[in-house]
Picture 1 (cartoon, rainbow, N blue to C red):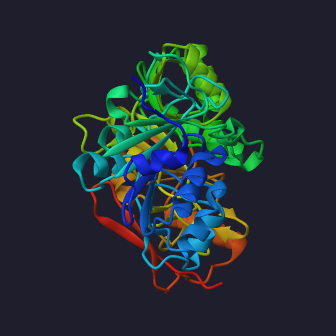
Picture 2 (cartoon, rainbow, N blue to C red):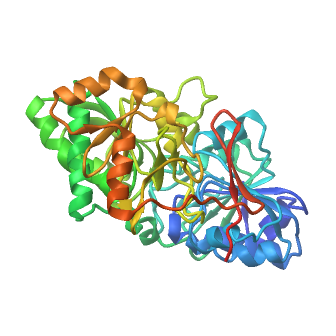
Length: 468
């Protein structure tokens, strides 16, 4: 028996896709993904309209969605992250219905709970057999973990594997299992793995960012959490990644071996695993090709689903076992609320991803950011969009020093005792404004173009249309 369908066009018809349904995609190939555009082009050719696109993330390569929105093929987008041309067009009012942003944990929770119904999941798979057993570690388009696609495969009414590498049955290991797959289509190419790596997933050489990273490593050292069995996640920004550079010698000096590194895994965490600083990696998404190679070879580097990673409805999730997470910000306000959805002008430039999930779960949630970017202060009175509530954020680290959430008085005392330059967050705000001047209060007041759903399913904020 085989589930292989001759063409993508035939697979769409066989899956029973109709007007008004929901289609889903995952983003493990990031800016190198070909599948979403390929599928949506064929859907448009078949005259299907009014679809909801449920994508774990959208990148600049997905700009053809703009025309599908204008032509009525797509009427709704739900995602965890969005950048590039599609984000700019949404910010300027492209869609009638607001985009709904979730977190990487909120998305699988919504799917598993039935709040989101996926009619057809189109799953890009670097390798598959004819029955639909699929993984991300084999073939020319290998991208590593398929963690974000696993909930889609399990819950969608129809799951379609799209692969450029059809292998004999039974494929092993199988991230996606045949029991969850309806159809398999072979295409020429599902994407370019080089697109996995973006400018934000490379180690910084900027001296300001390196100073921030050094302070962040010292915060971890003096937090009381850096001990045997320590667990850790870092974001994909340059300063966040650089924290690993300064953390390693501290762990070596203290003779500490961590239990696990978590999240979107980079080559820097792979190095820490291979050098014995951690005993395992739990990987929901590979952020670079070194991580892709590692997960295919090292049994200590383990793939996990998005549900296991961060779902608030799971019986347990890995984020709740985190000691420390290092995260970025476009803005943070004096209440420690963090914006990672928009820039300082209100344009959508990203999304929560795992930001709010890890901040809620970790014992220490640390934001690393410069005092200002492009002459605009990072610390403001009120963020343009609340992505992560201040109640879950513990420390802000800048190149001038650190600010500790008033809820964490004991931590503040520990950092002071460790010799770190500790300020009130209002003082850091003033330091920034001494350089930049006080910015004019601004918040787009146009109609809502996006809503931000927190991991408890509440709408935590709304993003307004910007003026072109």
